[in-house]
Length: 237
Image (tube, rainbow, N blue to C red; front, side):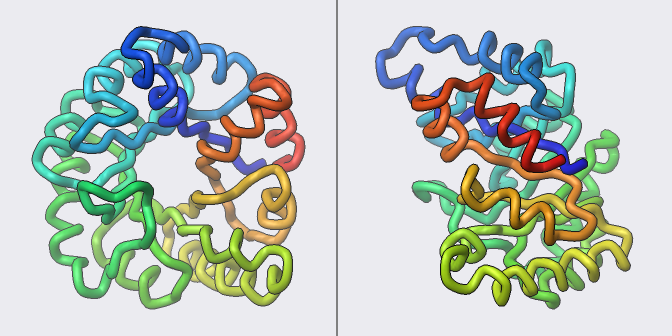
């Protein structure tokens, strides 16, 4: 069964909008795991507009499943990851002012840089994943960085879901099959939702984990977060 890691950035955004502690991010992380999620994902950015660096430190004490920290490996981010020592770090090439992640790494151009960053995390036995677009060259050069996994950027799939889902899906299945042949685990995320997740998971070989945040939290406003988490789990199983 594919694992569901819930990205809680949007919960932090809501909390920060009023300057207090409602909703309580730490309690929500505990509840989300108790409701059945297999992991918690956070993506702290330098301006701390949603997840704060202190949140990452606090969450380490309450995440009893798998904590995944995503981000661009600037010095401040690297220091945070080495302090928290999460189960997994996912390297994402987003600019400091990016609204959200909008591209995977050019792993051919950056593989030596990524390899040097990954060596730092591996010394502390932190599992590493690289955020990549669904093309075979990106997967091939990801392997050269000595990472443990890739996370396929699924915006293209979500964008084409209604009209070209089968054609677009093949890009992802080809990448997943190559990654598996190369000994890499396969994760996926971005713009997955209750409408498109089942087709993706049923047609995606070797899919280890999906990370879902914005859609899941938005859907929870209507349906309730415990219910939504279990709806995802049912579609992934």
